[in-house]
Image (cartoon, rainbow, N blue to C red):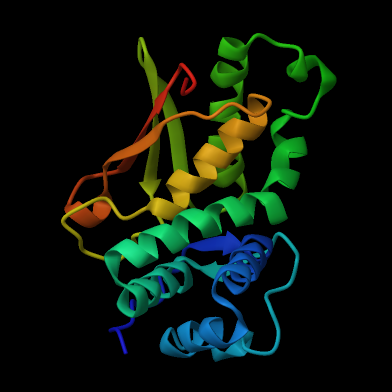
Length: 211
């Protein structure tokens, strides 16, 4: 059993915890998810998922411990694949419904040029996480790409690694950009990670879609 990361006092809303566990169940199956939950000492979710509300009660440590346990059971490569698939499933199963809060489902947004959609949509995605959770996120524009910063990151909280490990965030960003852009694929690469000793987790997002 992996060593547990202690509670942080920083939270995601229950609804995001619900979406995460639902997506993990779809990718792993119920029995394997139960093993991960038991390893993470989250047995309260064996029979009942978190409430589908916006109260901040799903501790960052829950997320970090779940993903640490995933890596322990499936190895770095297997957990990376599962995390990428889980992030996509999370977005499809519920996170895209947060689009109304970001304004990206407004008809006026849909008809904007692609460059404007990215310029408006990416910071809007960051604001959702900052406003609804204790995650701190912001975006900096560069000439040919954007830098998406997570300054307080639940994915790698308390973890140590030699390579970036926030694959779940990478996948959520890719899925959100595909949705915002109307189906285009964008390259998203984590170039800095707090687990490696960096001050922030930083994701480079190309402005041009993958050809």
